[in-house]
Amino acid sequence: MDKKALFLLMVGVLGLGIFGCAGQTMMMASAPAKIQPVSVEVTGVDRLNATAAKPPYQATDVLVLRVNFKLTNPNNVLAKVDDFYFETKAEDGTPDKTLLLTSSMSATVIPAGGEILWSWTEPYIFAVMRASYLYRGVGGEEGVPGVMKKVDEFWTDLGADKRKFFIDGNITYSLPDFPGLGTARNQFKTEFTIPKL
Image (tube, rainbow, N blue to C red; front, side):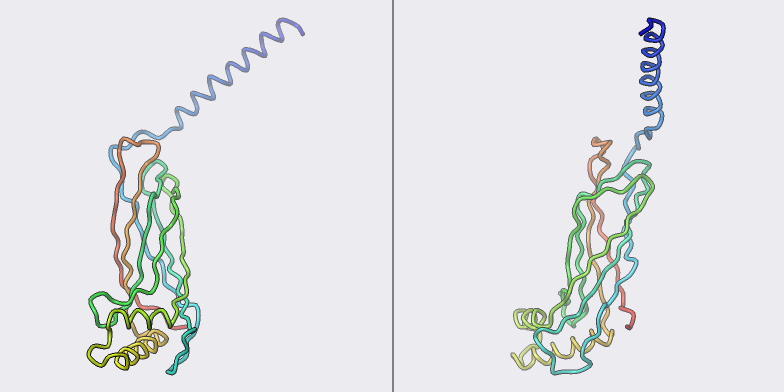
């Protein structure tokens, strides 16, 4: 190979390396002063099936719910969701409310200035609710017959979309490219009613 050609090839490779690194450095975002909060929005809650309109209900009856979230990263750099957890409950006349579904999301990332959509679908089983009411003593002094009455009332109202629902959760996130900023944790709460099928 000609020495001049070899020299030009080496200069070209070296030049690409230098300009490639310079371009990469110029493309990196400036360090943020602090972590901007990643926002969580419940974009919808869907009931995916119909239920029987009135008792007697079967132990295997189910109500399938899907909760839809939008997570938005306002930071100019990638954000990592380290932990995301939520619970969906419905009013039942007690301070605890009836827990319908709960879930957490695996660690994920949200691009700079971007958003992700995430949904969770889960069946709520009549027999599980009945056991929960028995354990919690919902139904008062009437004992098991009182519990069964409350269970039937609640399930009927769920099927008719007559209950108010609550979502409580928290999100923990960080900016992996800037670990010195630590992590942030926010709580979120919302109330909703399910649209009729």
